[in-house]
Image (cartoon, rainbow over the protein chains, first blue to last red):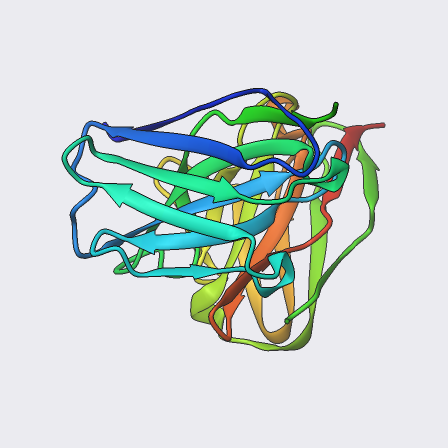
Length: 122
Length: 108
């Protein structure tokens, strides 16, 4: 059974870079029918899509984050990573990694990690 | 960006009652790319409905989705105790994904 697990620092200082990794277990990240996504959820608010990655390294991201997002893949470790630069308190949220399957469930995210809380504070 | 609006913000109902949740989009959404999620406190969202009306694996048949264009509905036919949660709609269009602000279904 496919599982996703986020890891990374729970506290980041303002203006610094937030870095998280998602480890995929129980299946290969290199399947041509899957995209891998990052989604965040500020406390008490709805989720916000950050960006997606295809195993080839192709990425897309939310225009509202104004080029602060970088998503990369390490196929040898079955992991993908998120870097969000120049963080502020507004970036405080639970960060999730998730899978988007493109044959059946199409534009939705069918498997999610448990999430990791990241707080931006000095 | 397509903006999703959900109503009501909170729905107070009793177990056994029917719940009707609305999701409205600022512009037309392909039904293939509209989904609904359930989220309980401290948990990740769980996919319930994809393609506007198809139930995800393991989702009970008391959950159903409908709609097209800009108006979509999630219906829970008879609320079970485990259904009290927050529900989000989500769409994919113009190379971006957006979520609604959520509807909380709580116990009356």
